[in-house]
Image (tube, rainbow, N blue to C red; front, side):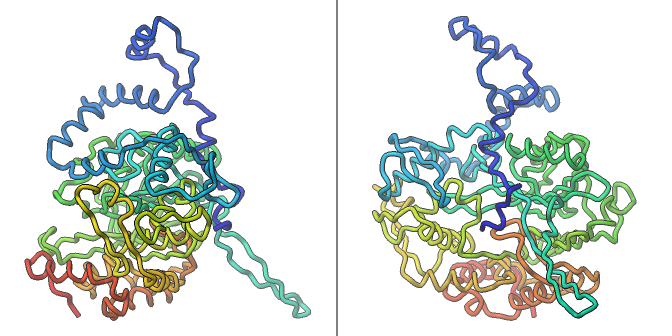
Length: 542
C-alpha cells in the first residue's frame, strides 16, 4: 500500500504530541492535585491529553449540566452496556517487559528477541503500547465500547488515485500523463474498531471546497491527533464548513457530536431517517452534545432542506442520492432500517460512500499495520501456534480478520471455547483449514468491489426495486462520471466506474448466497431464515 502512504501521509500519533494545546488554564482541580503532591509546582510538566479533556469537561458541565462520568454511570445503569464485560476482559494492558517498535518492513520487532511470540504475549504487548499513546486518547469511548476502546490511533493520508491523460501531438506521437486527481483535495482518516483481535478500519473523508473550507464525511473519534490534523488543513484550506453523516449506522454517526464541538461554526447534517438500534432514538437525543442543532440531509441534492427551504450549500460541487431499505420489524417494515448516501465529488470524480460497496486486497489497510499484533494473533492456524512477524503473516491475519468481520463465522474455522480457559480460548482457540484462502480470494478477486454480505443477504433482497432505482440514479440518471469509490471500510479509494458499480450491485441481487460467498454465507443464511420465521424480516422480493 505504498501508493496510499505518500509523503503527505502521516501517522500523527508521533507528530501530534509535539505540539501541546494552546490552552493552559490552571483549574482548581489541577491546583489541588499539585498541593497533594507535596506542594511541588508541576506547571512545567508535559501537557497531556487527559489534562485537556478534564478542562473540556468543565466546559461541558457548564453547557449541558453533566459530565462524562455522570453520563457513563447513567449509560451503564440504563442496561445498554452489554459490551462492558467484553471491555473488562480485553482491557488487560499488562506487559512482560517486551515492547515493540516499527520496523522498516512495517511490522514489529521485539526488543529482547526476534522470535515469534505467543498470542497472549502479542496481546499484552499491544495493549501496553496503546496505554502510553496520549495523542490517540478518546474521552467518550464508552458510548460505543468497541476495541481498542480509549485509544483510537489514526492513519491520515492524502490518498492517491492516478488518472491517465493521453496527449497526441501534430505528428501523431502519443504521450500518457498520470495525475493524482486527489492531491491536496481529498484526505482520509482511518481508525480501527472491533473485538477479540478482529479489527477493521472505519474511515472519515475530508474534501476541500473550491471557494475555501472543508466538507467532512462520517467523522471518526476526535482524538488530539485527528483534531490537530484537521486544524492544520483548516490553516491551509479554510474552516470546516459542513459535517455530513451519510449513514444511520451507529459506528459512523456517533462521533459527529463530539467532533462538531471542535468546529462549532460548522453545520452538521444527519440522515432524515435517523434512528438508533436497538431503541429508536434520534442521534441528537442519544448523544446530546452538538454545539448547534443538526440539520436533516435531504434525500437528494435535487431536493430542498426542511430547515432552510434551500438546496444543500455544497450542491454545485458535491451531489448526493440516499438509499433507504425497509423490510424489518425494527422499523415497522415500512420505514428504512438501512440508510446510506452516495456523494459525488465533481472535481475529483470521487464517489464517497459508507457501506454499500467495499473492496479488499491481500495487503492490510495501513492503520492495521501501525500496531500489527492483532494481525499476528489472528494469523495463527491453531491454538498455541506462533508465526514469524513478517508481511506474509500480516496478510494472513488480515484475510482471516476480514472473513470474520464480514461473515462472522466462516466455514473454514472451528472455534472451541472451554469455560475454565475462556480468557485464553477467546484469544486463540481457532483452528483454520486451508479453505479460508479460497474464501478470501473470492473477495480479493472482485477488483471493482462487492456488496458486503450483511447487505447482500439481509437487506437488499427485501427491497430489490428500491436498490435498483437508487443505483440507476447514481450510475445513469444523474450522469455522474466517477472513476473511483471511497467507502468507509476496507480499501479506498479503489477504481470503479458507473458501469462497474451497477454491475456489482446487480450481481448481489441476482446471485444466490452460496454463489456469492460460498459456504461462508451459511451463518447469515440461517439468520435470514430464522428472522423470516419469527417475522422480524420480510421474505425476499423479486
